[in-house]
Length: 181
Image 1 (cartoon, helix red, strand yellow):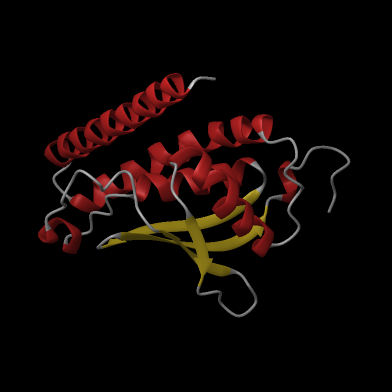
Image 2 (cartoon, rainbow, N blue to C red):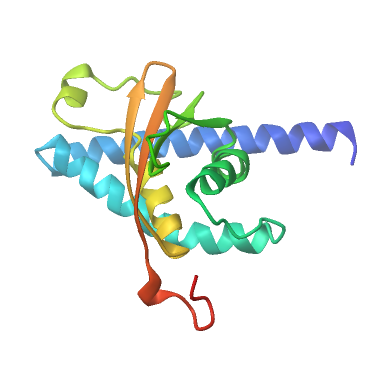
């Protein structure tokens, strides 16, 4: 592939990402007008992200057949940080702040594409708006699609976005036949 074609492809991806960010910001603004309480907007963003995540899990597994089956939360965090988040958001992520028992951790996005072009007013944040909750919802939906029930919440802090993930249970009642582990 020639250098010019690669450059055009990179430029079009950047434009697509910027268009998505602007569209996302406009959508959140409209939701704030429709729902009077910023907490309700956060709940709706989480639901939307959850629905996206359930579909993204299938897409991710289809595109990444070499990803091994995860057997513990550290492996899941590793796959999220090294494969899934860079694939869909185009940013690097790290897992840290593990709780005892490895049931809870924080994923830190060094740069969040959703917050690059916006500045969320502090009064909305203090009123309960989690602008990046759609990402947390998508992670929750993707993990539920592969039979892990988790709780996820997002918090934007300056340049970083932190997504706190807490594992609840393995959804054994919905495992396919033959996968009893």
